[in-house]
Image (cartoon, rainbow over all chains, first blue to last red; front, side, top):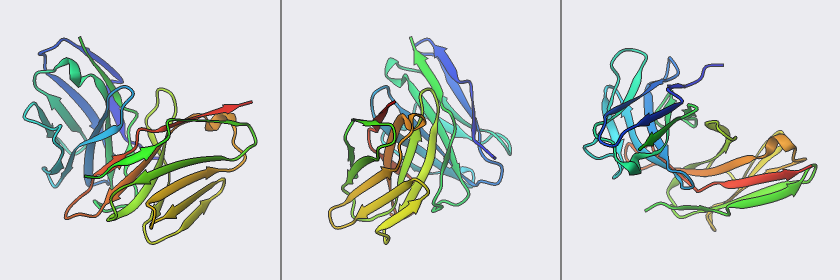
Length: 114
Length: 113
């Protein structure tokens, strides 16, 4: 069964460093998303991406964040200068259509900023 | 803005039915979802319901939607120990170009053997 894969599963970084979280969406999907879940809190929407551009983003997704689809298979989330409060589980998701009934989520990358 | 609320914990005995409840605020919600998260794992879509439906059944899962009260429930029949997980309710609104889901905090279901 096709699945969304994310690497690494766990990333530890020092405050102020840049991190790139990687995702391989399902191959025929066109819409891509990043969500995050701070420990004990809700899963929060960060950004959606379609046709090589951001289609929607939340207030959380400030100038420190960027997304890119550098090739035909990867979808990345970059945090330029990490803060302690960026520590969270980051989930990538993809869907075949923007208004599709199903968005498939990856296993998540646990980011720990120290 | 949109908000989704769930109770945080539910404990049931193996073989009993579990009912997980959720309320949401956005009356323009189009789809409502239930996701399951097992320890250390990602979010697995269990089932969803379109906002013009009242009920959807899928094997052991029954979703009930009361659109008037903005109340969604997930019933798991014959609950098994493998059903122990966190269950997230999520809503999707159909605003112009809106693709985002709003999640609740999740209900941790513990199944007692």
